[in-house]
Image: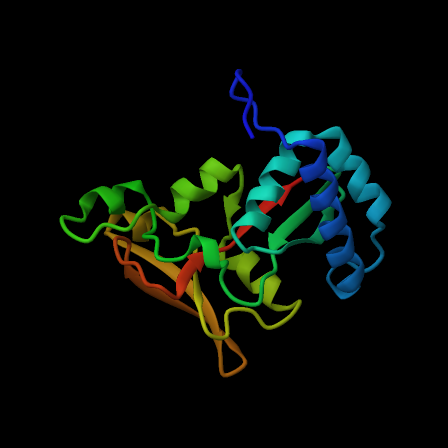
Length: 190
């Protein structure tokens, strides 16, 4: 939902439903955030309703966001998409706007970078993706675009990751490519 001043807000019902889902996931997956308490996470979310909207978008597109870390320096909780496979509502996208505009035929509907920006989240870096993979086995059948270094992107490429043979692999593709089994994972700091 959006009101007239373009501020993104959830209804009370959406907010309560989302908090219930996030709390249940948090409690079910304590190995992802040992030593952290849901009450402190919820207090942060209560203070920043715009972050709830972003988490709602992560959830709505199949990301199953969960807390993966607490950053003591910034006093923020960090959420990553923790769905077993790349979020289903974010697949079949090329890497960024430049790649989307470069396609002459069969353009995808969107790009990973544009979708992430519209959701208020950051696309995972390769380092963050590897950090996520230490918490479980993700993308065993799919793959996920990750933040591509400028040097690679300037030459027309983009990188993505997946997990096969119990190993995390990093690959490259033309940034304009898109596949039904490739999406992207995001992060959000609260």
